[in-house]
Figure 1 (cartoon, rainbow, N blue to C red):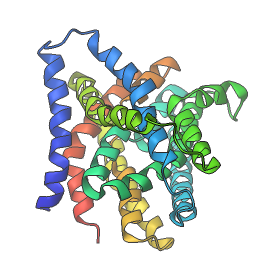
Figure 2 (cartoon, one colour):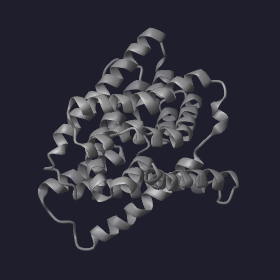
Figure 3 (spheres, rainbow, N blue to C red):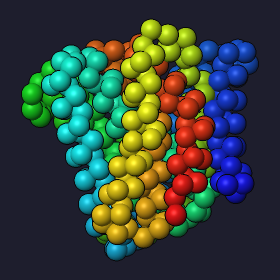
Figure 4 (cartoon, helix red, strand yellow):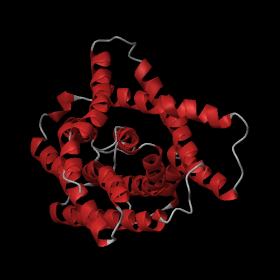
Amino acid sequence: MPALLLALWPLFALIVGGYLLRRQNFLAEDFWPGAERLNYFILFPALLFHSLAEAPLDNPALPRLSAAVLLGLVLAWTALQLGRRLYGWPAARFGALAQGLLRFNTYLGLAAIGSLFGPSGLALAALMLALLVPAVNLLSVWALSNEPGLSVRLLLPILRNPLILACLAGALLNLTGLPLPAGSDRLLSLLAAASLPLGLLCVGAALQPRELAGELPTLAWNCALRLLAMPLLAWIVARLLALPAQESTVLILFFALPTAPSAYVLTRQLGGDGHLMAGLITSQTLLAAASLPLVLTLLP
């Protein structure tokens, strides 16, 4: 437990730091949108590209992780669809609730895995992100749409996603066997190193405690499902597929992460319930400070 807290508390300290910096107006207000854009389109894609370009794609963990991720997402999506039929949620509300359950804070996840397992854990995390990022983005856009099925209009935002493009480019370069151009490995390492701390500061800056009012029952059950039921589902899937210990931990950690701050932007762009989405992001991020150590402590 002490080692786990030592690995996690600096991450939440950065989140709190970002919140305080913004609330105290230490930086200009327009700094944060620019920082988020820089991270989302350049720094974080550089981290994903670099991780996948050097990841062992012949890793025997890939088929197992693929099966575990797909099984977990299919079960969660099925439960969401049953809830939508039962309660009659409109697309605007269902999209926010679905993202609260399915999306994950990648910055926090990679920082936690890097602290716990180092490069070997990050290699597994990169493989998992190559599976999770396209699938979760597809389901998120679909949930916010009134259309019953998939269409080109739904797929275009997915195909333009910089995180998906970075994963695809890194995997393709890896499969070709070509080395990175001279010096570019160092450049990508520097960009990647800047991504996680800046991302965590931006997570804190985006927290909106005032958005918690008015939706407390909904926030409570969605947070409980995301932070406790989803990692339990991942644990069951890992046991069913007999995943090794490190792979199980990485899978469970990603399913235990709070939802992604970028979910708010997507929700607003597609006409979803922005108030509910902001409340889910804030409440899950705050509660994850307690739930993540609890979930990881209970792992074998």
